[in-house]
Length: 487
Image 1 (cartoon, rainbow, N blue to C red):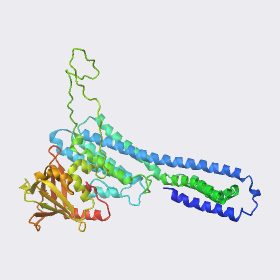
Image 2 (cartoon, rainbow, N blue to C red; image 1 turned 90 degrees about the horizontal axis):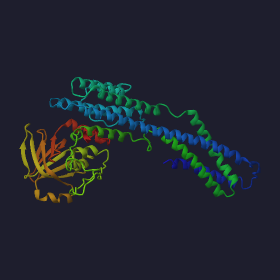
Image 3 (cartoon, rainbow, N blue to C red; image 1 turned 120 degrees about the vertical axis):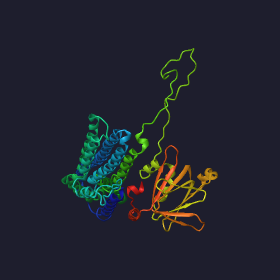
Image 4 (tube, rainbow, N blue to C red; image 1 turned 45 degrees about the vertical axis):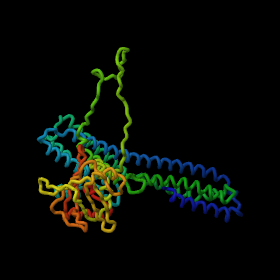
């Protein structure tokens, strides 16, 4: 809010008006000031005109910055979604397609991150990207040191598209593929247009004139109010209202003139990057790449909409032409995690937000144990109970097999009922021991989850990677989490 800062000037102006009225004009003859009100009205009119013009320009810059960043995101998303649609459907190319799409989303996240870092004015401009640790060190170091990283990433994406076309990973005609290059180019143009808001400030002579006129207005308004108004309290009140109005307009213009800063009223740069990452990761989901099927029923060989029914025909039940559709809104932080893993992952997500210790897995005797093709242990269970240690930060996961209690699990705190059995894969590097009750306890540092969209079965793989655990500790220490850990 701009009122606290403007109120400081207004309160000082009101005090001056009251003091001048009580100490000066209460005994001093002020006939020599008659007529000054007309001159002061003209001065206030000019100041109000330039203040309104200044606010209009500031709002135009703010709205233009908002529109250009949204336009840039939309243009690049059209390009990337088109590339996903143009990928080959040949079974022999599926591995190449998966690799191409994985590289594409990482470069796309880097592109948007570099673009926002180019136009934002943040003290800490580190933004979240999709994990790119697999990139070769030479390219990553070059990207960190170059002047315009967004231009380099754009060129990398274009070269990636050309290589994929040569390898038949992208199977589409050249005229349609050229649309992708056009959208990438228009997105860069939108970025450059947004960059002018940061590079070129509001003209200094104009801002200097407004500031000086406003300060003069602050000094003379209480004097004129004390001269025109007979009551000291009313003189202070009127001076307060006029001063707070002008200074509020001044601070509003200063607040929204640069929308890419870190003030409360600026654009949420970090949230915009997270939303872009979620959009890219959503393209990787199988359901996003497969066209849904529709079972459309036709009566008497064709649709009955718009057809007149005769008297000798049997009544036909018309299908519904319209229906209500709702979309469950989720925060940008949890959107991709919930969409990818299903509702069974929500409980894991809540516990992992503040996790600082290892995972302890307890397995009851009723669970089924087996081995997969790699020799890792696979445990199948139906129920899952989790608890976090507030002191150590360790997360305890207990698996059991109690089909009779599945219906009651919705009322139990910290317990999740699964729609299908859960399969757990424990890598040989994890630490295994027995607790006081004789139940196996397995300690791991990493966990990967995947849900079968058809059967609803949840597969969880536990591994032990000290390097990843150290990276988690570093990210937890400063309150931030990298994309691969959080997603």
